[in-house]
Image (cartoon, rainbow, N blue to C red; front, side, top):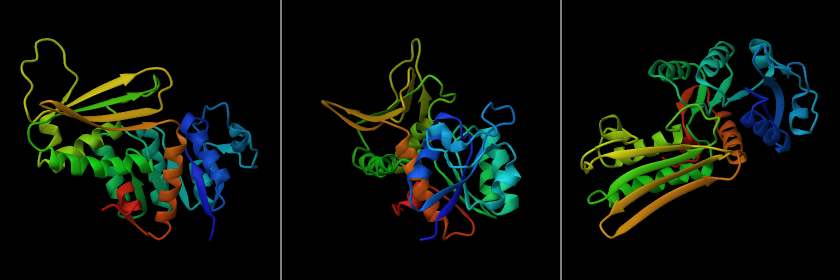
Length: 268
């Protein structure tokens, strides 16, 4: 099997380092480039040294040069950076895996437009287990379609900048779609004061931020006399990285198109 040449965006960050570690340990992958912003103190350093395994690939801020000899870019940074990387991938014909969350409507439209030219995997959570949970939630929502109140509770580390998480929102979307609802019309994000009685069609979201929590997500179906909870807990970021590499293998057979992890895992 041909080794896939990866570029990692945000290579000095927490997720970037995990991705580098995953690529260096994978016999079917090779680290071809590592990107950081122009003021990063890690520019010019060996990207492998960030995870204790020197590999001879320098950290760079030159996007075009970095992407000149890669098959796929993996990006778990922030929307503004990801959109810059996306434009470069589109120009150079490089596939991209996007795990970044918090995009505006315009940002999502830019991703859709790029996917008409290059293959893109765009998913709020790359972990295989989380995507199995999405399928379980759709089934549970169809079974528990009446008499159950639905709440989505998520917890992340103190450094996460968007809330609710992209994964929590996707969970809400999956449940709403299974119930024939529009999440934008039935979601409520936190409660305070005299809220009145809970509407039966409401899907509530609660976000916890603290410490070094990698990512916990629970969807609660609360009925009369019983509660059903479907939970995923991430113990490390490696689950996201391994899912991204699986997405990279999936994209090698594609020339264009917008995909998510349900496509990658054959769950649709």
